[in-house]
Length: 254
Image (cartoon, rainbow, N blue to C red; front, side, top):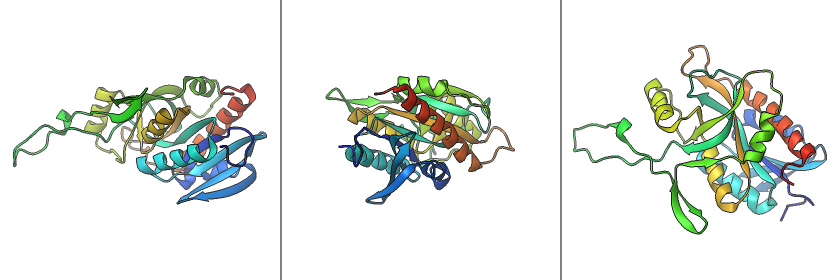
């Protein structure tokens, strides 16, 4: 089922208005479809069907939007994109991380500690997400974006910073403590963090739909002058538009 299209559309999710509105405005022949609380904007880019949804902030929101989009449109692929906070001190605002690896930051097991012993957060372990892999229930710590889409994204020219593959962490947490950021980078290899990507990747993995997470660095606790700036959400969308156009022109997944 492809909604009103005769081809499998590309689905793009952006959590905030500043991470979705610019792309929505680029759709030709745009129509809206409301499914529950989520508005899906159907249209064309370079004559190819594309659906864009502001999925709202958070892992549950993004996973719900991805699930509805897959059920409604049977998409060619799902792209989750937007802003992120740097974990790698070498990254700066405007740099783009392509999520070769996607890890969950919000799932923990804690060791027993008696009342009054306090918390030992750096001793917590992360069990990963429970997913069905080939009819086997497994705990998975790391998911991956589709390598074919990553190859295309790497080939897109970008003059406003670095573009490279990396590890993106996601949870309903905004980490601003440098010791915690350093701990997550040391133990999980994270380059940046956001609040949606792993949920989308988990849904896509279980429903066998190619996906990719593309994130621009919008803020970094390592650099005092790099507070969150929503303008980078538009910058990411501009890059993603070029990725979409190249996917269409090269018929990468078709």
